[in-house]
Amino acid sequence: MTVFLAWTSEPPADLEGPWREAREIAPGLLLLDSAETLSVVYHALKWALPDGAAMVVSPVHQTPKSRGLAPGTTAWLRRRTPRQVADAT
Image 1 (tube, one colour):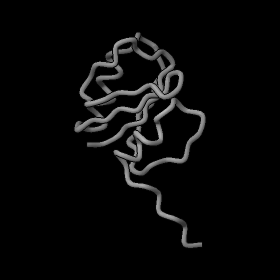
Image 2 (cartoon, one colour):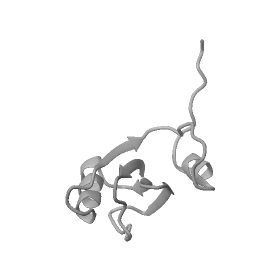
Image 3 (cartoon, rainbow, N blue to C red):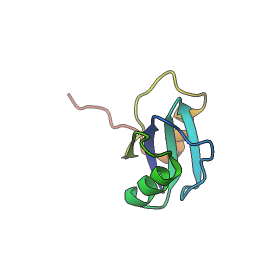
Image 4 (cartoon, rainbow, N blue to C red):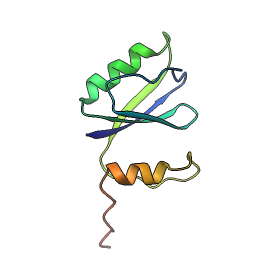
């Protein structure tokens, strides 16, 4: 499974798609847990949006640093992504 971070200017009311789970973690900001490729996830979200809606989708390869997101977001990410490795410097 891969976690994808997606932002859209007009989040869909229905978050059905080729993902096992979808979470809105802030207005327009989504986490999508999917076994599909970036292209498949991108196009599924694109087709769920109204014409002209802005969007971006990117895989999350490790647990990011964050704050101020929906409760449970960090725990959800930690269960699905590797933790950051401490800098050696």
